[in-house]
Length: 152
Length: 475
Image 1 (cartoon, rainbow over the protein chains, first blue to last red):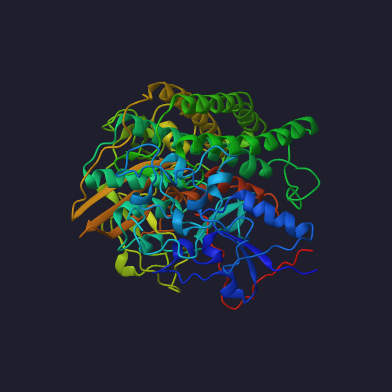
Image 2: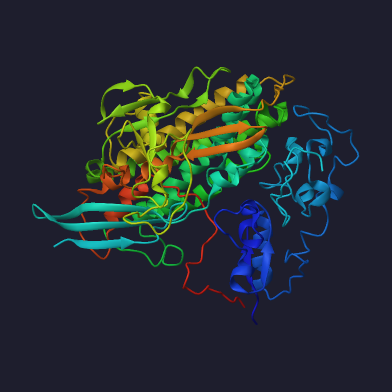
């Protein structure tokens, strides 16, 4: 049984940090090879996402993908929808603890990933819990043209 | 008649490195007589930042490297702090240091066990240890088993070092918590406690395994204390600010020439980047990083690297653990392949112990951020150290946008090509005189290269024009 190649990281899935102006002319793997890919998005991609996808391939499981080639297992719900700070008072400036980071540019409302529940580094922490607005690093639009700290 | 050996790609380092060496007998010993070190990939991070919002800089620069993103975050926010004329509060300075320290510990353990040891060990009879070169493996069977056991334990330790860093950093790699003016996390008691527990376990491993294994390696391969000296010019920008003004650092800045004499000061205006042998437009030759430009030009006559050649007053300088430890007075045993490994191991312990102290200096309830106003136009730079050596970011803001960004990475110093005077870069110079017993397994050359811990900056894999893509079907 043949499966499409698997690719991690934003730069090889879409174009990630090399998005416009893209000085080195980077292309996504799919565009460069003409092959279908499984796009494990993220800058960086979570190791659990990568290992899960490889495991699914090894045991012969089909991996449902969204329109951007990302496994729907991890990339179907928005960060915002899963975020524990969703209904909290909004932080009005940097240097505060615990508030919703929408006004500080959080891209959670536009970003699909399960970071709020999976968390990072064996569940130790994740960006928003550390009061850092979500950068939207799993989206094809990352890094985008909007400054990170400007409200969406 | 010299034999040319090409090693491409060099494995067990970060990024894309190619080496060519010329080997011939000198006074009866076959050895390296000339060397060319090539960084084989261009990505253009400096260009990506033009016209971006200044506050975004640290997020972009961290993506230069997945092994050492934190120093790029640190250098960026230090440059921005200067530009914004803001002094972060102590809590922020300390948490920035703790997360950077976690990254150093992760990186050094990784480098010794996973990148270096396989040059000296005959690993288990399975991938990824095999296929491997067989030349010159001196450890007996019992020691080999013990080292392999520590290699595996070290994987666990690097993971724990990253978990520790994520406690304040948010996540590792690419912690988003570094911001100009301070840090976004708060040093809550339970987080401090958790960080301390991880740190104790790491210090234990560093003391009882890493340092002992590095010492043992230096004993069994004692001849490597006389290999790979190079110019013995050492340079450090300094790192881990001990006070809010940054006047004292855990490792001071300084410069040593020829491995001797007093420690000289560092003046960034004496740093010029040469592109005579690099794939950049010659109009950008011999510029300071504050003026520097990145104009790729490929192909170009006589050029052989994507790295520019940073020079201090016209001389090539080595950066990294040995440089920091020597300049700081912590290690002055010698300059060689083994001295680099030993200095790195000792540095890891020094940093771990310092981090224990810094943890006690955090104050719950105090601020982590100082506000600022963004000037319309300003120039500034931030100097720090990555695990591999001195790192600087030079930026200019005009009309509230980044209009100039130049980065000089440690491996650019170390793996630099020749300059306009045709002086070798540090690794090229260190390779000269390296004995090569077996042309088909020039393990001595690898050992010299790996001692520098080169990090070429991880990259999107490029497809060379004319070559097809490789597709692996699983299942």
